[in-house]
Image (cartoon, rainbow, N blue to C red):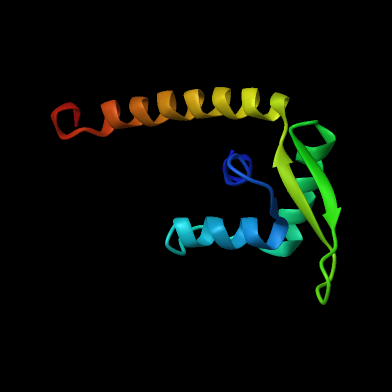
Length: 98
């Protein structure tokens, strides 16, 4: 869900995705290259992401990933499930229920 959310608004390369997750979580969540790229490949294989190699002058080529239409549906469903899960945990752990 986190990876797909990072490419929802625009295509990004793997390193950028990992750094953005780390930045937005204020360092709480970190993806190491060894775990991030296999996840990207798996999401691409499932048809939820589409990768494309891009070369820029003076830079090494990078694979940029974007969310597919199927990926958008999956992300929306995952967000809904996540909200329901967080709501349930909050109901259980609220002071008045403890």
